[in-house]
Length: 60
Image 1: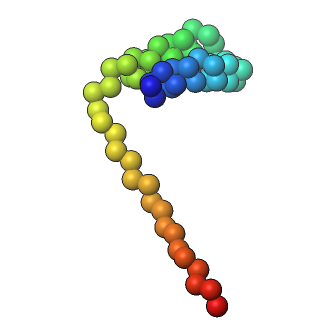
Image 2 (image 1 turned 30 degrees about the vertical axis):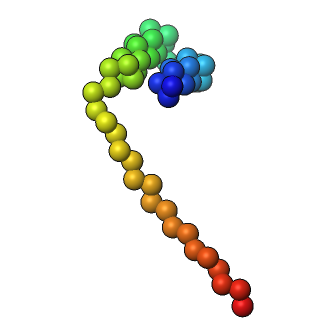
């Protein structure tokens, strides 16, 4: 599901943004094709560490 969302986001948001930055369509197509290939052929698992902290304020 996350892959589908990423592919849709690339088509709807990334492509127009990059093309409006002045990059030729041929180069953008190559970049997007490679991005799709990486998304569809994932051979690695990614792990993220989310550093966070919280506290409880005592009433005085």
